[in-house]
Image (tube, rainbow, N blue to C red; front, top):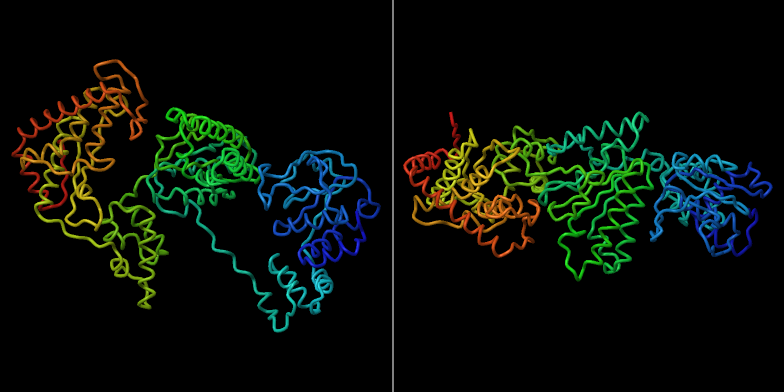
Length: 619
């Protein structure tokens, strides 16, 4: 070690407040060791506060090399290594190497906790020291060599008790006259803590899995189960705004893990998405997560990574390499104790099956739009519980299509309205910022009621549903699709192994709305189609699954997986013709049945116009 630095090196070091402070702290920590006193060879492990670790690295290099800017032809000859921390400048190498070797001279390993250091390295170390943060005397010394105004010990002690960035800034400040010591000695307020998943409303479908993994992680920490017994790969599937990103952050907080958040888009944005830099960015994210002592790696937009079954020939090399590398990294990451991988997508069916298999992202959680009670709880949460969920039901029960993100936006607007009027938040503030609603003309409401009763009667006729509930709207949010003016809810039986008859009955239920319009009005509206998820979209997709996937058409043919009948699916011409035939045949049967039931159809529709909701019970 270099006890005395050359003048040039000392001048350079003393001009850097953080480096000089940690050089003082490092020398103090090592002063009693043979490595410092006698310049003995050996491995030194220094445990240093996370906020100071990179400044300690810079100081340690100066202490060991005397400021020489040597280049090392391999990583093992570097004199200073940092363990368990993400490098400030991420490279394709990711995290620092911690391979053990006997040094020719002295080598220092720095870590923010001894838990991050492998047992083998601890045993190989000649000395392990705790490197305390800079003291008040170090602050005084640093200000002297910086050539700034001297300060007394009392003020230096107050400065040394502050977080690292404040210590560095005040040490380098030219004059501290007028600085209030009382302000410095006040406790620093903790930053706002992001919520745990158990504190958030909603996420009903995910709760059982979250409870299970929380217990698994607790058992793993107590070493009663190995990491291989923990569920650690999950895919979140749901439309935009359903809270997938928040879920990952809240899960990390629930488990006491770090969150490493990224996306396929971020990887692709590295250096214009060239393959090498894309793979390096991906590898760096995984390395960051696996280097920590517990991390949730959140990968958004996972569908953008591609699917080898549908890749185009001109992109096959690129996409194949990306998917292959992602599979390797995921497998390796999930084997590392304390690493959980959470993927998120709006389109689960576009993801390569190898990513979704058991052992990788094996748990699939579908996040749908919140139910009535959940909507009220979510809005109450974002309003800071200033209003109860029960109070908010009169508002949220009318927001059937609101996502959690929409409800958060509504809460922000309501709180702003209360601030503007300088009053306490009230239900009137919430109502004042609701999206504008426009009344539907009575003829439109009547047609919607006929349409929904058509679905309901076909569901009853199928013999697969016992209880059906119907609800229609008299007002629509400005800009919303009129297709969402009515809803029919029912639960089908025989879902475990549906037969061809069951599937055809489902198609007739989907076509029942538009057929009822034609029976009553002599014409049809656009209410059955126009958007993904509409009646016609669902009926057409189910018909394609029937003939192209389930083998229930004219031929015993399998062409595509049932979950891949989407907008990217290109059916053979004969399949298109067969599907057209199925839809036409089932539409005729639906219209014939509803024609026979026309009197009942019209009576129930008239009741629904008046009541706006209805329940039909088979019994």
